[in-house]
Image 1 (cartoon, rainbow, N blue to C red):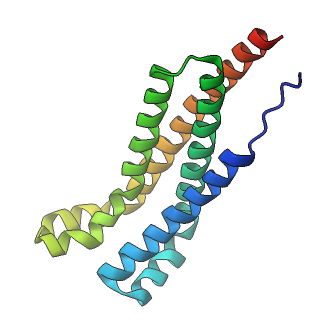
Image 2 (spheres, helix red, strand yellow):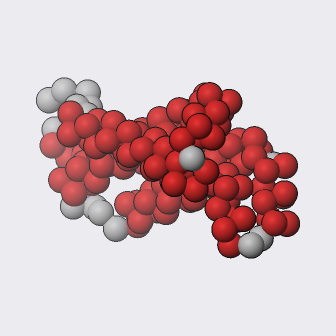
Length: 153
């Protein structure tokens, strides 16, 4: 049996997650601040936004592949819960910069000043969470695939 990992279905869901995250970005920002502001922000921070969305998509793909491998080996449980929590934390960090635009609606001008001052730092925190999530889920996938290969062989 080959030890290579086929990612067909998980990769499709990962690409879907990537596209969905960008669609949410464009949708929310356009509703709150208008299309021209959304485009300006995207052009200003496109590299952060694309990396965050790609990292999230990769986590989704890895997570789904891990779930496939673990469910075949009948060892679901804590691994899936922990990796799902990591993905959720990365998503929350990734979207923290939206507070800059939503806070005025809530009347929190102090929060707006704080969030806008540290917007790039929020991006870096999101990227760090993405990297940690990818490393964690990737490691778990590697271990589960290796353990499952021994069970099948």
